[in-house]
Image (cartoon, one colour):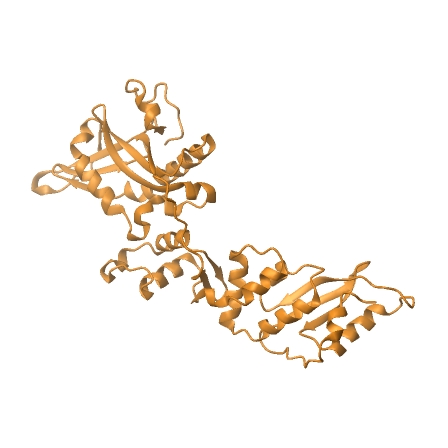
Length: 378
């Protein structure tokens, strides 16, 4: 008569143990009248289920077969509601509720986080995750990227010498870690998968592509006694004049790198498109000489040729790093030379553009601002 509950009636009567911290309640209603339902705390014994059935059966003609469904869910696992559907079998839900009852706060946080990081296609997957909490780890009280960065460094998960801690950008440390690990934040901490989740490897040979853009370089000449005249107006150097400072600029770029960026460089901060993130291994800023001039260059290592859309997406990301990300900090730091201090911007050229190396070099050197594709500028 009630197929939705049929399997339960063959179970032994159980004592309801709800009342602890972890719980699962479901609201059951008639399919034809979802607005009016009744709550059932799981796991429930036969008598408790029958009470709900009798309430739903009130006013129905004798012999009527009711089709029932779940219309709402309450649980101490905050996101579990998203993974329970209206016709999930109560027998399985009761088993799940029994497991949830036994969870500590730590296990509940891990369960919540693992649900969001895995591909869940039904109640069976939810049950499997509940049985596999040992494959995950909780970093307690870590609820923001900055807190994650601090935890990784101070716990030794990321090895960085203590002398460098004061200068670290902990959020960048966290971003790099997140790009290489499957994890998520919960209200009790950061949950990360530790088992059966090997980092993706790609055995294909990497190809190198380069994007060129004009540099803007200002200098503050040294005066007597080696002091720089920073109160005076800076002098802008031409791209050809900047050639004599190439080694100092390269050394400054190297100094700007963070240990957490590893071989991938700026790509650890790319999270706009998962497919492209897997296709582009690394992105590093540098400077190179071409036609007697010094250019800003973004060097990318890719596993296969980029589509036009992917190339545009990578270019936009590179420009963003030049202007608001990596480049924003780099252009504000003085680079000491034998003649004074210089400041280098990858972005502030009046006629800024960015072009793939092949496109730039296929013709004679262009005059900046003439017949060039403009991407943006200041």
